[in-house]
Structures are given as C-alpha cells and as structure tokens.
Image (cartoon, rainbow, N blue to C red; front, side, top):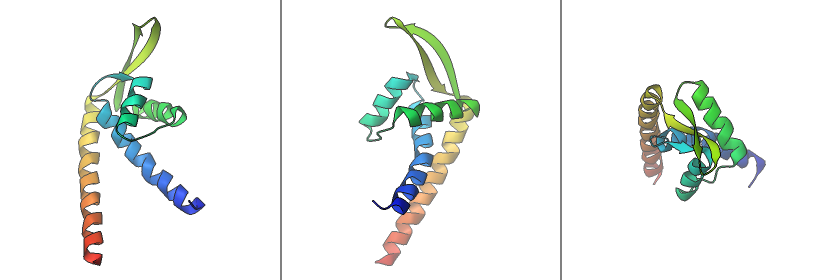
Length: 110
C-alpha cells in the first residue's frame, strides 16, 4: 500500500475503533478480553493502540472502570458509562448516515 493510502486507512480506522470499543464495552471487559473480542469480530488492534484509546475514552467520561482480583492477578475492568451510551447512540446514527450516503454515491456511479 502506498503511504498516502495507509495514512488515510489509519485515519478511517481510528474513528471506527472508538465506536467499536464503545459498542463492545456494553458488557464489562478487561483490556485483554476486549482485545480478543475485537479480534474475533475481525478487528486486530495492537495493545499500543487499544490501551491509549481506552484511557482517552475514560478521560472523556465515556467509560467507567474498576479494579478487581481475578485468576490471581489484578485487572482493570471497563464498561460504557451513561454518557458513553449517549455518545454511542449519536455516533452510530452518524455512522449509518455516512454509510447510507456512501452507498448512494456508489450506486449513482453505475
């Protein structure tokens, strides 16, 4: 892939990953279990991308977290907050509008 395409792909992916994380955290997960869930859905997210994203979403008030002992180790569990649910609803609506517009443009070309 050319550098330009890769840069644009990363820009597109960055926004959709935030949406995917909010959607996934309607059920509580710790970082690694969230990464596995995203991978099962077809989104391979590096730890160096996922953890800063989780922290950023939490700093925005979109996620809540708690520490828990599990399987002999301390883990931080994350879940979407009420504000995060409202944001997810708004972003999902925007995603659908954009997707519909792209579909319309693609179909009008033929």
